[in-house]
Image 1 (cartoon, helix red, strand yellow):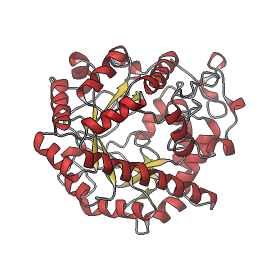
Image 2 (image 1 turned 180 degrees about the horizontal axis):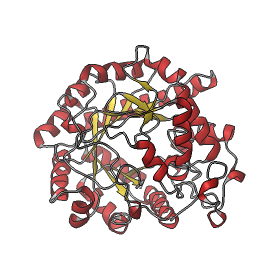
Image 3 (image 1 turned 45 degrees about the horizontal axis):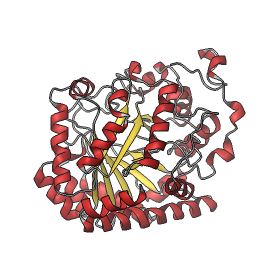
Image 4 (image 1 turned 90 degrees about the vertical axis):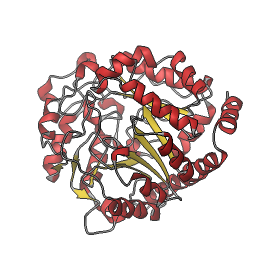
Length: 426
């Protein structure tokens, strides 16, 4: 399998792009993690990876979207984005995730990539704006990988994404990116309506045949103003997805990203471990994209390293979350986020202004943290990579004890959720 993957990388991609990814994402990415570990030992903090939602606008209206895509357009202007990335690079960062809305609706997006040839960008996109011309420009830049979202069959895609013909337009963008030999990924928010269509070998084999180099199956999170909890996976389905990811990594010549487990299969949250935080379209610095609360901004009049290092809100978020769960806090303990926001006077970072009400209305449910059902990595390469670069960095060892986990069959009533873990609903 490893030889087959190496052959694919050498034969199916632009060699310059492959080298660029190996250096900026691989070597420099590992270096950024190393610097993060050194900072933690000194009692300092700056996340080694940053995600920026550069715009709120989108041409689609996806079920469960937490972004104010229909509101007046708001974007991080080019100067502010450049300052933020430059400040992060000074801390050793080399990789940046670019989100929206739909990032390619940002008029200066390609200029942003061009301004940072020493960094690598992963763009979360529906693919509709990737034409051959755009793909050629991305190939020339060499420091961008589009991660294109596919949410199911034609019918399911139209239903999930709120418009007719979505899959055709997405596949057209994917094909344009592949024709131009970009390093292309495909991601899926796995939910009730697409798990059977996409979490299977047939779909992965099709991606490999097309030339897709990596995929990402992440779990649908019922958040936002129209959360659609009926789409959320059960605990058994989440275990099924995890097992599929582990098996695919060990048997198929395609890279499979996973952001929620370490090498032994223990659950973790990248925001709780400090591995990454998020900047929203208004410049607000949030724990992660789905937690739209903040007390700081990239527009604050102080250096970004000071903002991250001195943020009581972000520090309290990491510690409080780690004390109570290794999973997704917004799914398991939304009450903690309400408590945290009230304690720090955190502002709602949305245009709609209803985040606190949304958190209070969430029915807690189990996320990726399922003690006793851990599924360790089968692949030796992934085991090594996670042990070095993607683990909890001691976060849960400092704060968490599994004896605090409440078995779902003995879950407490909702009114006691602030003192025990958690009310679980499927």
